[in-house]
Image (cartoon, rainbow, N blue to C red; front, side, top):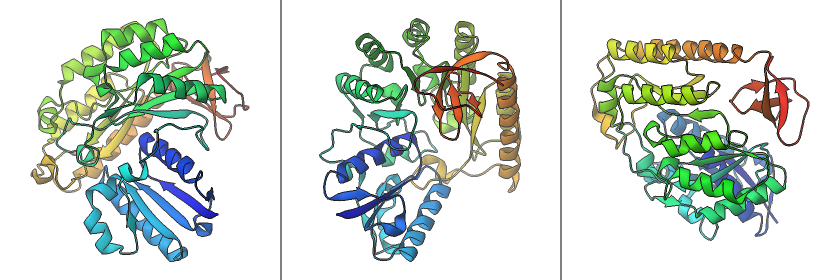
Length: 382
C-alpha cells in the first residue's frame, strides 16, 4: 500500500476537491497519512488567486522535497494550470496533473468531509466574468453545474452521517444552471430533515426576490448570513475592475436584506490598492464599509496577476500607500466585527459545533468555550 498525503491551499472548492482526491486514491492501493514525511506520494492542491499564494506554494514544494526527497510530488490546482511551464523549469522533479485529470473518473461527490465539522458541497465550477484583476477565469474556464438530484443525494448522505450544516460552494455559484433559487427550492422540497444551508459567496446582482423569499420561508434551515463581495465602493474603480454593479445597487440590496432580516450578517471581500484607486476612491470605500455596518471584511491587498487586464494598469498612488490602506481596512474589520457581535450578546442563537470547543451560529458568530454537541443546538452569545 502506498502512503498518501494531501496539502491544500485556498478556497472551499479546493478543500472539497482534495476530499474527492483523497477518497479516489484511497480506493486504489493508497492509505492516507497525516505527516508528509511518511508519504510515498504527496499531492499539493494549489491556489493562484494572488502572487502570495504562488509564493507559498513554491515554499511548500521546496520544504516537502527537502524533507522527503523520496516522495513523488504531484502538483494540481490553479497555480499548476496558469504557470505550468514556469513550475516545471523551477522544480523539474514535480509531476503536474491538471485538476480535470486528477478528478477524471470521479462523480465529484464526497462520502464524508474529513477533519471538518461542516460539510462543503461543490455545486458549480468555472467563471466567465473576467473581472480585470482576477486570474480565476483563466484557471477555471469551463462552466459546469452539478445536477440538482446529485446534490440532493449528496446532502442526504452527509446529513445522515451527522453533518448539520451544508455549505454550498462553487467558483461562481450565482451562475448555477437554472439559478441558485431553483436549486435551493428543490433541495428544501426533497429533504425534510432539520439541517441548515449556508452559501459560500454570492454576487450582489444575483440576490433575487426569489432567493429572499426562500430565505424567509426556510428561516430555520437557511443561515442568516450572506457573503457578498463588493471589492470597492468607488464607481470609478468598480468600472475599472469590470464589476457589474454600482455602489448604489449594492446599497439598495443591502438595505433590502436588512429590512427583511434584521439580524442578518453581511460579510464581504474588498480589494485594497487597485492600481487606479486614488485617495478619494479609497475614502469612498472606507466610509461605505463603515457606514453600512458590515459584519466582517475579508481584505485583499491588490496583487497583479500576469495575463489579466489590470496587470498593465499604472499605479496612481505612492509606494507605501498599499500597506497603510490595508492596515486601515483590517482595523475597520475588527471594529465592525466587534460591533456586530455586541448586538447579540445575551441572546440565544442556533449553532453547530466547530473544532476547539467552539460553535458557529447561523448568523456567523463564533462562540468559544462551548461543549461539543451534535446537530443544531442553542447557544448563548457571550
